[in-house]
Image (cartoon, rainbow, N blue to C red):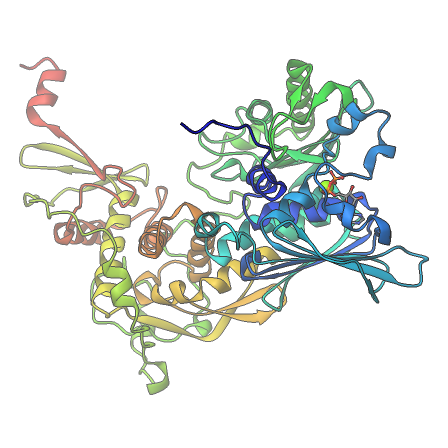
Length: 610
Ligand code: ADP
Ligand code: MG
């Protein structure tokens, strides 16, 4: 019989286990390294990545550096120089300095640490690969610290397979940096990916400018400053005009004592302050900075310090709600909202009364049509009369698209659609179409139905390789918040399959040079922007085919008539005709019903006739 012996785990195994907690993906490495640079008093931090950080993460700072005799110690587990900053050991831990980040990172990657203290004639370097420490050697670099992390998870192949595409990892890194850049508004920070600059945040850019840089001018221009004033706890920051709202809570940023954290309860408090000012399901935008005494908050309740616990949660809740609410009340928003129409995405821009906001004709080539249907798909009939020059032929679709799209979920079985007596179709509230049917009546959601029809038409054309693409004579330049540019360009191939050709124009600008002819009635730029919003969330997508299908759904949604669009009788009739051709006219691509049926018997019963 073998006797079980208790054994101490080897240091490299301990490091691997610890890394599991601290190092989840490249973004966690970037976060730890940049936090160290900030702790070292750096005023400038330059970050360079290859392949979403899985090949290389390099962080260069101009901070206080590490002395030669301390270099190796930086990799030792539970080694920190930050004791002096805290009054006692416990406070040190309370502040989140546990001296385990570098040790953990070096346990699962190949790390080169180079550093020179300002005022010293030269610096030193040391390597640490999978917890194996090399020799300390002289290094001739500028003052500050330069750290390179290569081949993340090279010794844990299982972890490596969990990494997502470079674009997705880059998205996570951008999110981490956004939080750090907002929390440290004097730091100059640059990010490069695969040799290209993703963004540069100048040190002089204040908090408001930083918000604009990451989230666009629309958000920046709608901010109101808040400050609760001195107290046991203080709340400062910016909250957005209710007109600037989003479909999710991503643009609700919370910081406590200079650190980002998430908190559902405070998110709720914030949202409560906007009660009555937002449509249901819409989320407010805000950047909230709390300052509280360090001993009234515990930041060690989460391994990556993403969550915190306040000693007095309910008073913080009230502080958030009342400060934000008081600020919004000053603006006297309520009356404005009573006149707001329900489906305005960006209520600051006026809603066109016609369903087809016209695009500047000079920017477009004549549409190439096979379809001679009425105006719902042909808003610019005059254009069609022009002759088509050979260079204006539809672009060829990349040959790969067929395989990719056919991987998408198979179309549902066609439903049998009983023929309708389309005589007296009535549009109500510019949103619904009411019809008399042989058996009763039907109420159709015009947006849901049109969305389904466009989705099917687009998908069929892409699968059969017959998606007509309209090329723009002058490509449309679109300015995007810097971090989004990289994400869009990484997805250029997928976008091309959908008929949206994008290219890099330099800076924060991309060029859109084509769009699917089928969708011409809506601004191609808006369609692309809708698709971009989805791309930014795409880590939720299990594979390429699902992503494409999802983007297709978004495109159809953006291009379809909206609730609130007045339709002519001709347009209604055409929409109903197309419905008969749809495979599944009963559900929109998101799965919601397109129509409700009320039978004659039901109506009679409700009115007490039978
Ligand atoms: P912690 O930050 O909790 O102290 P880390 O493992 O992140 O632990 O870092 C260990 C030590 O290495 C730090 O305490 C600091 O002395 C040193 N260090 C790491 N990065 C830097 C840097 N960029 N500049 C100066 N010193 C650094
Ligand atoms: Mg650290």
